[in-house]
Amino acid sequence: FDPKSSLPSELWSMTNLTALWLSATSVQGVLTTHIHQLSNLQFFSFSLNNIGSSLPSEIGMLTALRQLNGENSRLFGLIPSEIGQLTQLTALSLYGNQLSGRIPTEIALLSNIVSASFASNNGLSGSLDGLCDSVKSDTDAHISGDESDECCLSQQCEIECYCCKVI
Image (cartoon, rainbow, N blue to C red):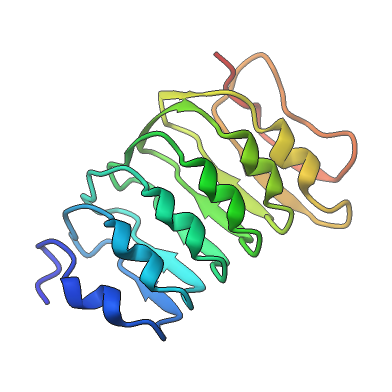
């Protein structure tokens, strides 16, 4: 397929796919609701592209997902609350997009997370305290949002947590 076009519809029928790396391939188009068909997907990276869509709520059906990298991909809109269903997730990067609205409280359900970034999304509001609190105490985690006066440092675990943007 031509990576400078939209994602081919045949991609969604590859149900045994465990890793999909599309970073910096000039992919354009939307993340379709058909993404849930990739039920065995563990690693999904589409960073540094021109996706230009919202994150579909069906992303929550990818329960085997361990890493989701979508930084600098022109994502916009809300982070779906279904993201909290990705309980195997260890890394989540949504840095540098145009995400807006409140960070869903369901983010606190990601107890295996060791790295997460929501920085440089000017329309994003809320707190990452729930996510910081959910990380296991024996984990050296890195959770970041945008700098502000209010910090999301958890007292319950060893977390390097840059201050979270609260509007």
